[in-house]
Length: 301
Image 1: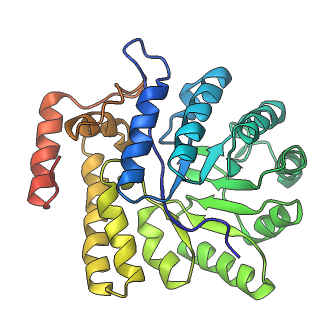
Image 2: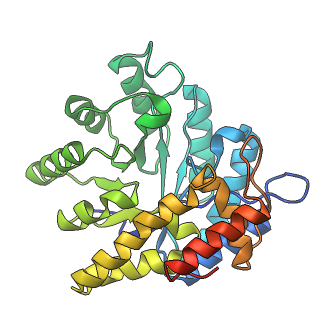
């Protein structure tokens, strides 16, 4: 049984003119994706820029996301990953206090690919699970941690109480292997692909939720594709999924796709400030070039 169902957005974080966390801008973005049909949020992950913030800033942003998502009726998962167990637990308890539907964490990074073994990682998640009353998910992101999940480790994480996962690994074989194991063992686990590229596999294999980065700027397109599948219009789904795949590349034309969201959203009338350095946003000329490309795809800012 899945506790989460539907499409997830992974919003970028709003900043004010002084470069501080902007709760008003966060609310504006949450309301934008909600009004366009997105059902869930995964906040303060890679696109949310958690690694650019202090713990106090992460708490302030989490509070803003959770208040806005509650008002919009959207389940919200907060990433609490840290290099230290103590900080991860503190962030998880804070997220729980403010109504998070679940918390998620990367493996404790920096040492994750060089020094830590299975015992280090399992102990980290065991204590995180034991310290909070909300579900704890693994945030699987080998590109940023250098840690590659395997089936034995997946089963061990289930044994310590991890009850879901944002899978950003992009490995179809691993994903389908986990799906088969969950189904065969009848395990209550929220397996949520974290990329649009895995959406067809997720839907074909009966998963109930998926995260799509492009839904931050074009939530209506991601929702339309999702709905087309569930309405049985596979041709429309394929067409719109193809556009979503292209959109991801277009957003990365001049660097980070997450950093490009700020300018592109402003062109849609959604003001969330500018990205925090060292992220670099789009120049006016770059935004114009992307806008022209999008128009050729039938998308208008």
